[in-house]
Length: 348
Image (cartoon, rainbow, N blue to C red):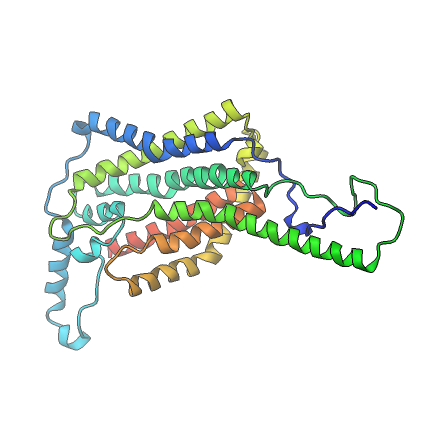
């Protein structure tokens, strides 16, 4: 008697076409993102270094600290001890390098330029490239290698004809055990496909605090901002062309509109807006986790901790929805919230 096909829960059935790119191509794109294009962008910035703005030292953060001490000296007794501020040198040193640039450039003539480039790079270009690399390329390849996206047999429409004989009670029990084992194995493979890019994404955000007594020069931080924007755009454009040229990727595979029509643009914006809503719901947890980590580990930069859980959230959403616009909207929303919060502190 022919055994029936394994039963798979409908919520794990995938209707999308399997990712057509290979492990070698995915590794090549990641290598371009991690090493080649950052080095290329730094070389380009170095060639045009004389045309870039020149920032004066010392850092502005010290001026803010002195100003706060002078303004609060009269009412220190009434209001209690002075609270910590991101404008204090030791607090500035704990920020992301690009955030240090935004804070310390406040009273320079180039603050508006820094804000504009910061928004374009951190809020727009970085999410675009990072979601392309870590979700579309790396997670897509992981899901393909682990067989996550393989279509599972449908017990209601089996490809192999079943015997007309009734299943015995023992056969039914064995059938249920096999189904449970198959579903459990699939869940493990799904978790592994999501976990790998999330760990990698978090590790790449590990950085050390700056030296408050000898902070990184503003000119160097500004060059890093420009280099980051160039490298991100190069990675997205060249990576997309590589997938199309060598893997035959389609717009559906990449999760972008199939045509630059009004209807395609509206559909993309709707998916992007869905990502914004999903991130608004998840932002309190991510930001709260970051705050808690800062309280537990005040002497280290704790960004990789909330970033890891944020990447897990992005990975799960991408697995279930498989739309690039959704995870792009989520990532841009969180970065915009961080940008708006930092700007509020700087302007205050």
